[in-house]
Image: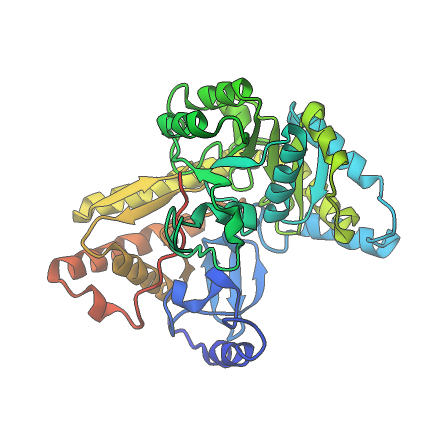
Length: 439
């Protein structure tokens, strides 16, 4: 596939005059294949996207997760358009559609006794932290995973003497975060219950919140989440499950339903409305009532576009059994990676939940190998990295083309590793390493 990106590059140069870095954070070209990767998209349809130069790709990233059904899903889009045309969407007071959505979520997720609807994942996690602090009266947080960009989260990256000391995660600089927030957020690794227990032993008097992704790259070890639940109860801390990534992928709701451990609060965003801005904080009435004792509000949280899209997405998700499809497609992708690598003697490590798998290439320069993978897959018409975001729009024909392309691309990368010429195959610099999650 011959790719021309003249419009994309020109638009990016223009964008640098108006936006910091030209485009936002992880969407900057140096995170993919600089000078070779599309920067601006024009449209999407089903499982495909088209850039502003007219190049079409099979989309294996799907907006980093929110597009769970597919681009321009008619049933969902029509619901939103009809609401706008028939009733409008943003008024001075709340609209009853919020009640309808809250009841639907409560029907699916038992711990959702009360709900606050917001617009983004970072909105949801930050508001949940505010509510938890209001409930316990304790400020310190222990967390496991990635939870957004707000000060409470990045505070874990502030070292004792230098802003970049301590628990620095590449790409998540705490610049701009008040240094007085040092020692208010403490990270522990997933499945490392001893790390959590040590933090609790040192800070239990002031520790009021445990926030974590219930599942991410690995399955929980036996008893791990149950022990986290027990610790939270023992120290009177609020347990928050961040389901922004895992929610609506393994089942009709949150991953914690499959695992069998209930949090005090769970937060959802990606996938609950197929790309429309929407997020939810759900929780037990006992904890959620504390939100009334603080200020959590936004003009846009009471509009009806997000809830309308969420109701339509949940409806389609249930009657099409989307979670089963996502898991099956994700498992097929993992099988393709493992089978193709095995045939050509390539060493890879595969992880992630079935609907959100990822792989890593085992070699001396994995970042260069990953960059070459992205570059070669792009040439074959795939917008892809070493992580896959499954959607209902991914079908058999996509998998067949993907499988063939993976075998060819893995072969090229393996030969380059053996010949020690990974860098010579790249058409641009090695991609920057994006942030790691403490999981």
